Image (cartoon, rainbow, N blue to C red; front, side, top):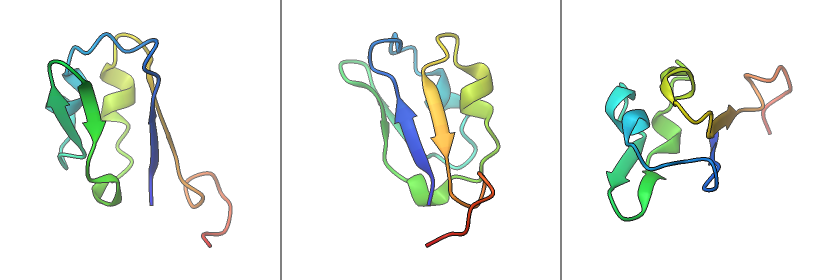
Length: 70
């Protein structure tokens, strides 16, 4: 499972992450900003990370990091 972290201090609630995600991992709300709603659907394409103008998103996974999945 993906562990998707959004730094709420850096995030300016632009919604780009939700727009570019091909698997609809994020739900966007103008008041709350992006919310991670489907982390299991993440395919680790890193589009959200690459497109975030605030560098507010980090994705980690034990498999992606080269560690055994528990």
